[in-house]
Amino acid sequence: MNQLQPVRGTHDLIGETARRHAHVVETARRIAATYGYEEWATPIFEDTRVFSRTLGDTSDVVTKEMYTFEDRGGDSLTLRPEGTAAICRALVTNGLTQTLPQRVFYQGPMFRYERPQKGRFRQFHQIGAELLGTAEPLLDAETIAMGYAILKELGLGDAVTLEINTLGDPESRAAWREALVAYFREHRDALSEESQNRLEANPLRILDSKSAQDRALLDDAPAFANYLNDESRRFWDALRRGLDMFGVAFVENPRIVRGLDYYSHTAFEFVTNKLGAQGTVLAGGRYEGLVAQMGGPVTPAIGWAGGIERLALLLDAPPEVKAGIAVVSTGGETMPAAVGVVQALRNAGLKAELELRGSLKKRMERIAKSGASYVVLLGDEELQRGNAQLRDLKLRAQREVPIADVPRLLADEV
Image 1 (tube, rainbow, N blue to C red):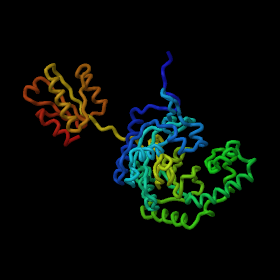
Image 2 (image 1 turned 30 degrees about the vertical axis):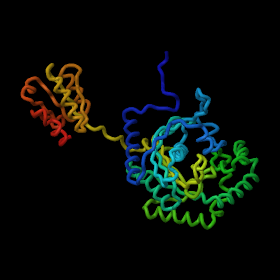
Image 3 (image 1 turned 135 degrees about the vertical axis):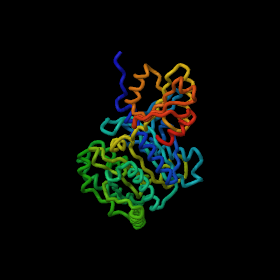
Image 4 (image 1 turned 90 degrees about the vertical axis):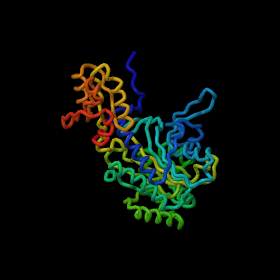
């Protein structure tokens, strides 16, 4: 039998990769908590309608990328391709639409069937945040500022650029949509076959097209800025003032668009030039209709998601592995005491391991290579005195101390 390998587009989180991944999650969780966000965890698979309704039946995600299957009961289920829809579903399911706003942080695996490339997998992981139940542009700015605070804490503040755009309110979007449709109809023959189909079903999706011939047409397409009404302009101005208040630098990029009708006003991306073509590391925007599509009331919200794999690749160095303490029993009668010491060290919050295999010489060689900072040696003679040998591997110094004092002494020194 051939050696089994991970499924294409998946990867194991081990060693340095696992440490980088955990560091991104723990940093994001800690910063989000300071902004008042509470962590939610939703199932990794949902009723398919959770995603087909919210992402649109004609979207690439729904038509090409979702992992959808029928369970034994005949229900159509889908591995979640993104986190926002599931959070909105959870808001309604758990009766939380009456206690708004809700500030939600989440993290975990997502699944999309697409071509694997640097920083992109078929099972990938995201951190994300949703602020549900607010419509103030200042809170949009704060939500973006929280994302930037996480990036800065990861040491990536100078590696990313914030790009923002406005999608306006529904009235502005309707006017722009009408102009876009007229423009694309004039150039119908120049559109890709897929975008020609979208022109009738959902023309805004042409804006998300990856086709070179479609992208070329966008240069001369009607500019959305020309269709903003007064309300949309006020929101846009207030968002930019808010970002200034929070000290978050930005550049305006009118090419940032969203193909779905429920997006409104704020759209943004943190991008980098350090990952090749896959430059977006954290992105989001304001939306209005997702909660209503789950059976709840119309609820304004803003959110973002960041790819953990991409963020982990950008870290200058993996988090350091904390030096441990090795506990060595040198005599047959000392093993119970050694177990007691290693457990006492762990209870004190210290990293400690029993070293059991081989001769004392071999064990000490392995300990030296492991990067341990101290060795606690328990021999029969020391045990009779109630003591242990405490060896500092960095200073190459050794002293005899009472066994009961070992956790306290090492807590002060490690």
